[in-house]
Image (tube, rainbow, N blue to C red):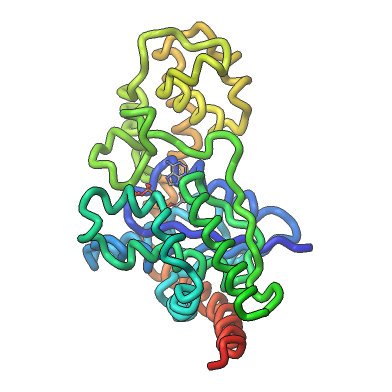
Length: 333
Ligand code: AQP
């Protein structure tokens, strides 16, 4: 059976190494597999669940598309499109929202984290964000969803919504149950300033993350200043459990090198952080700087970026509008 892959990235600026290693790098791997159809979306409807400046949002939509292409996605092999331009997503989301239960949404930890203490002031959109995500995935009969570990709970909700709809409408497997594809290792890249916090776009400290559009000097400087502990590098993985910063940096090195953490530990066991950081900088510059260069070239070529999205929007619309027509019949509209 062929695989159908769907995933998305929010155009909220500051795309970083976590987005790359946790998601985009895998998007490229899937694109290059046989018998695999890939759909990658710039999820701008998700982005507006928190306030966005309209002119920055427009620039970030193009920047995220540029990051996809600069990382190796090819619009001739994968569908690359902009969520808000394909009306089916909003329509499907409303319908699925009527199958989702309040109790399920109340358990979503991302809402709790993002809404913070003052959840009464959070947008309704932020609360129903996972339903829109379910719509994105289920519209395309997706079989596999490559995401970072932080999205696992939303994927489980997607599966619950699909199962409930199929059962309530006696519609067999009209909504296909997707599998999450979360890497076993390095699924969550942590902040360079605090190994217990996720590397994140919204962290006010630029030093907490390596951005995909950083210069060589910025990459080097951020790694040099990354938080560490005072010990030498360990000779086994057990010791890493109480050393979050060492674990994160060794994980980043391993992931960039496509190697297991044990191999990295062997390479650097007993060495100082300063020696290790030099090697980490080299590999980060080798892998990330070409993306940064390509992104800055692409960002100037609005015509090309916009044409990639227009083409992808039409293809996504053709597939998804058919699914919307079918669900309307099932519901009795
Ligand atoms: N630190 C991370 N490690 C591994 N994967 C990550 N992802 C995000 N951060 C990490 C994965 O990147 C994909 C796109 O994420 P998104 O566009 O939904 O953004 P996000 O998860 O909201 O990113 P941030 O940086 O965490 O943003 P804020 O600061 O707004 O919360 C997803 O597959 C995600 O798992």
